Length: 321
Image (cartoon, rainbow, N blue to C red):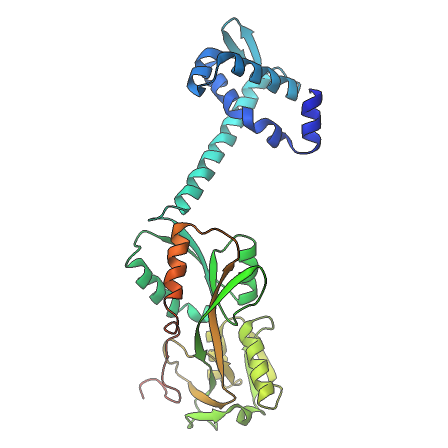
């Protein structure tokens, strides 16, 4: 290995050292002829010859046997050529993929949203957006707020709908809407005939809630504290409709956003005090350039301010009433 190559490798890697010459070597290996490879690459033949000599010097391995104007691959050169072709093919596929994702008309948006927005809100949004952008593709992730923020920071998501609206210096956030929360009780509960209750009236009830870390769990705890009590949590889960099932089974009460469709076995009661709402907003990473599809979808969401959260079934009514 040359002294310059050794110095470069000490501060980097083999890939960083060799990458600029791999496509050149692949062309030489295909033709086994320096002049023809140089013509394909549109570089002077002496420049390509020097590049191949330096590549061999850096590796400390003879890759080519020279026969005048022609060359042949040594056993080491043939093995290296196979690996180089695979690596270059992978680079081509990666380049095609990112170019495809950024295509203005048919690119991809990696979009995260809360579980509670999956049954109705997000499908309706996507249907409306694709009326004008029919070829845009979506990679959808349903999760809770903190997980989606971490996925954005890791580059896995372009933007997300979340609640509460986060505050962090590396994020850009916009409030889009607010959604009322209902006290959900079993159909035969003492409060089930009511349409509206004060949250304090449920102070002695067992609660079924989302697990700690979920935004809705933190909001439940905060609203109960405002109402003057700490909820007695009987069951914790990860999915709001599962919590409704637990309520329907008579295992407790819960604070939840309205369902897309009223569920049998429960009553959805409006909460008169404290004001039980959750803010819904969109978040993305500050300073990250958008592809055209992401920018279009972001503008679409911002244009939905105040029209994002549907009303859900009327509080206090069972299905069919």
